[in-house]
Image (cartoon, rainbow, N blue to C red; front, top):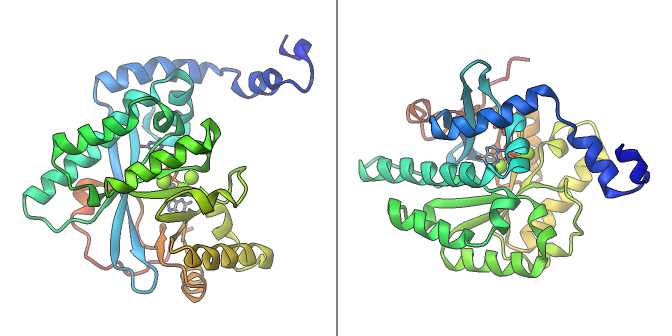
Length: 284
Ligand code: C2E
Ligand code: MG
Ligand code: MG
Ligand code: MG
């Protein structure tokens, strides 16, 4: 029926992409109960200094302990939560939980590093987002220097002017802002000039075949060089081999994140890690 609206309409594409499988219908219903019943847990993955493996921050990555499906990955439920609007309460829970846990550790005298939280563009663009961030910092007592927010280029879709202003405000609050999955978006590079961010995270797609695809490697090198000229810190995601690490060190990449150093893990496991992570070969 959607086809009748014309082949090239937005509805046609949207309709095609969002046809519900019964699994998605179930999940939509379950998400509601999940928030109520506390079925979410934050895992944490270290981000290390490229040259020496020293842990510099951790990224919070949400997991869902589904009553019948077991551990569900965010790739399977974040898009649904975005469709239903449940990303708003879920995103708020993630932010509060990450801040609370870190503030508690700090209060206990543990040595802590900043935590990075992924923010959906829907969450970012919703009225009151900045107030919500401030309220969570106030409530948990976490110093803003210990919070990083990761957002994708899609925050610009709702109006670049407003996104720039909001990031400026976050910067003024001493919160670090990173652009996630950098290079996979639709935007022109010129937006980088105006966005007052601190960091870019190179998407795993660029890293995967960096050793074999010289055009890919050229893009990565170009991004690193450009970012450094703008005083931005560069993180590469999805590092799985020592050869990738060495290549990125040679190209001047600042920070690395990937299974080579550590997988995302529960907080208890994170607390047992040494300050510096040795590179370990990933079993295939
Ligand atoms: P992301 O923010 O780009 O996070 C990095 C993803 O890459 C994580 O997947 C991580 O487990 C995975 N990864 C890290 N190192 C490696 C590696 O060496 N090899 C491979 N193959 N994968 C690696 P995860 O945890 O499944 O999360 C997927 C995406 O879901 C995230 O991508 C992020 O966009 C989203 N997400 C996760 N947690 C949240 C959240 O709390 N809120 C929102 N809005 N989105 C979230
Ligand atoms: Mg991220
Ligand atoms: Mg990413
Ligand atoms: Mg990603």
